[in-house]
Image (cartoon, rainbow, N blue to C red):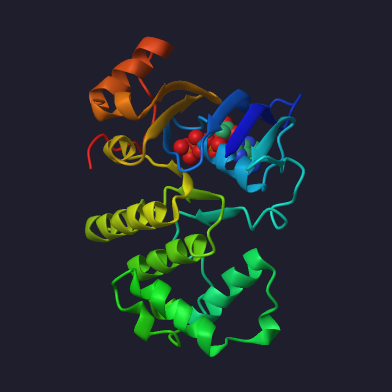
Length: 265
Ligand SMILES: Nc1ncnc2c1ncn2[C@@H]1O[C@H](COP(=O)(O)OP(=O)(O)OP(=O)(O)O)[C@@H](O)[C@H]1O
């Protein structure tokens, strides 16, 4: 479903600011795989997500989604393949527009549907049904401006908007990190539900080690632009946070430097 073939990305090459963000990265995900990514500061996690999304073009290598080479396809053109939720609940939605308008936009973005056709009765009903699956009452607030929603509600809506169009790949960019613990739990539960319902191939970056172990069926640990350790479902079952830190130390000969890593929930 997702192939990352020998990806290299260097920022400011041949200058004193040169940063090798991705180095010969070669990874593959099968349809329905859910991988969590952890790693040290500046390991290349965000650059990897941006490379899949198309906001960064790699210097070398290619990105293949569902058999299509999308490496040179702009972020806009590959939007129908990708759903993405960011750390900031404000990033995925337009505050001055209603829930219904926001959902229309995400539909238009991915399905190239003309917004001028407006919301039909049938579409509105579909929006309601999707919103009802969140179980937080948003189905009764279609005309509420998104800027009036709480952070948790807004992130739940972002998550729904990123998934109800059934993209090929869902990218989660520390999407629970800005929420308080109860909301974080809600969003994680909703994520699990939506990923399972749509069988979405998912890439989730997180700084919470326990979350990385508990969520999904695969785990990649990154450092200096590479995946230095990976665990499949079987290995993940028995993995502990301590194991991960030990692995890092054994492979790199130093402790993982991550000022935001949360070793427990
Ligand atoms: N737009 C950019 N311009 C220049 N350098 C960049 C840019 N984006 C990332 N980098 C550099 O590339 C390297 C990888 O950064 P990236 O943000 O991908 O790491 P990360 O694993 O997401 O880090 P963190 O967990 O600290 O957010 C870092 O050295 C970073 O400074």
